[in-house]
Length: 280
Image (cartoon, rainbow, N blue to C red):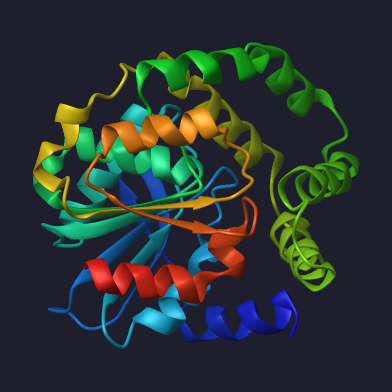
């Protein structure tokens, strides 16, 4: 089955809502019954919460699930954490298990450091720890961020989209099967179909400016050290050293590995769901 054939029935069954919080518009889906354990998902670097649709489908009978997009009106990850905290309060949320993939794993760390009382556990997938060493490495990766943003702003964005999709498949799906690559290609094409330039510039800038944050340390997460799940692809966008930095922040975490690459969160969702259920 193609990505389109799967996502369109999901969107009919779980239509998105929009809530205005602190002057920002937050697009979200909240599924499952009140009173069940709540899981909140943080998006990766495309800021497309549809990436989690299988998790909502498969988990909302036993759990309450919340997916949402980072609001485009808020420019920094730190401020975004503050706004989504207000968003959670408006929804009546006092505590939840948080899961984040790639940049979403970083957002989960940022949120947990600011609001530890709201976090009942963490699932961090295909990501890196925001310690001093990782931030130094990421700063090198994003040293050309102003030029990158200028190019995105002034280029023919519709012609740029196919190149971005091919780059994602080439760099982040090297070890996937031909069938999985076809599925990912369809997923990215679907997501990019109506993906606005402004959204891309916003999330790229937010990801790149994470390097300006204060580094995380192990004591930031003392309350939840025994309620953390780390899942790493064997070959990922993030280096072995960056994976080790995450382990250093969460030395008591359960650690699992998958053979897929950076998109394992999407392709191997059954494994991720199973491991989360064992922890929650």
